[in-house]
Length: 276
Length: 276
Image (cartoon, rainbow over all chains, first blue to last red; front, side, top):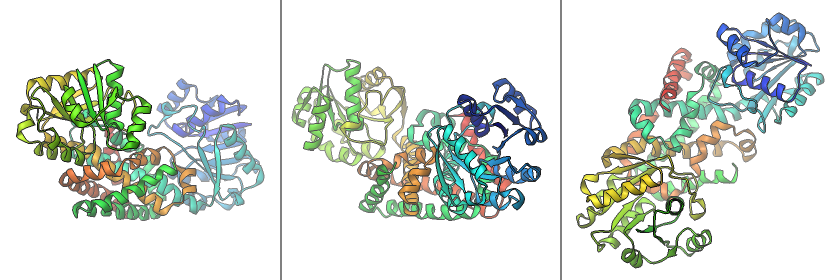
């Protein structure tokens, strides 16, 4: 099987590395837009050959879109003429809006996947060969896909060591919002709060585990994340409102010195222990 | 030098382990209140001998209070009769309120220290021998202490591999609030938000790096953290207000679809890269 990867940053580059590691593809073709990325991809030897979209469509059994979610939407028209045996798959963090934008003529070929993994880094140099191992990938609305394409997706994700969860796109977007998009919004806010109030010297001197962990994802790509916030806008606004209820609650308990209530509220949060 | 440690949970137990690892104390005495803790401390062999407070005062050159910040306040009266050559030191996460509560008769002996380290775990079993290594300890208002005690504190923290930062207690409480207390309040809020909206099955299936990292400290001890929130109440309320300005900003940008502004705001958060 020949596999083409559009975009070879953290997600696409790591996929290329995993496919190589497990000898899954006969040949891996890659496509990147910028000259800087192309140079890095070649230096890192991420793919067998960097080609244009036309060649990818001709040569590949599976084409993976590993680009920001808005770019997925704008690229779809270029794949309207793919062969019915060619699988096309996106790895975006939002699913409903993307699926709505896949024309019915290629809907059977189009696998909507979201690997729940990542780091705060981006670009070809961020690619690592074990990004996907032991992690979960969510596949959405598979009832719209042909079996050939579903089986291909299952096979590949299993071979690179992922747990597969199948779910409705709408449901996915709500869960991904609480488990990933909301935490990112909070982390960006925390980082901006601290940087507006604290000088770099104190930050470096006093950053302990808590802040370091909680601000890590605030280093993530603005292009990637503003696209995600845009495509999952309604769910994100809801999730922020839910989070703000909790922030108001802790503020009120501290302001009104209700420390027994505060302990009870913290104990509720502690029960996460039993889950994660 | 004999060292006595009051409270042998994460902080005190880890200190005992570090002191043993580097052969710093001739003998380590310990004090714990509950029978359960005493059994665990003995099983883990954390100290040379578990004794009462009276024995600790008689035998030790340095007495370390490694207990929740409200318990530090309530224990201070038991140390009013210590010898002028005995150092007493607390490891609490707040400093101003504690120093205000140290009577002038023992103020020269009392070293106010805050090691900026920890994990979400608590109790004797949480103790690890490298908790302090490479981390920062803040020492406050040293101008009120006798040199004997200051030198002792410096020597010990250096020997267990810590970076020492000296600072005014008031200044410490503001920094510790932004770098540690606010992140904890946010993490508890995020955990409670997710647990009120998501079922355990989805949490375990979909928890990726972002949420896992950001909810980790929400597993911390409610007793310890409600005490800290109480003692640093004014700074925490301010810090929450500052954070809420950022949360409101991101919500407004998403609601009003100002994605260019959103990217700019995210890029500001990205600059944390250059510091941490």
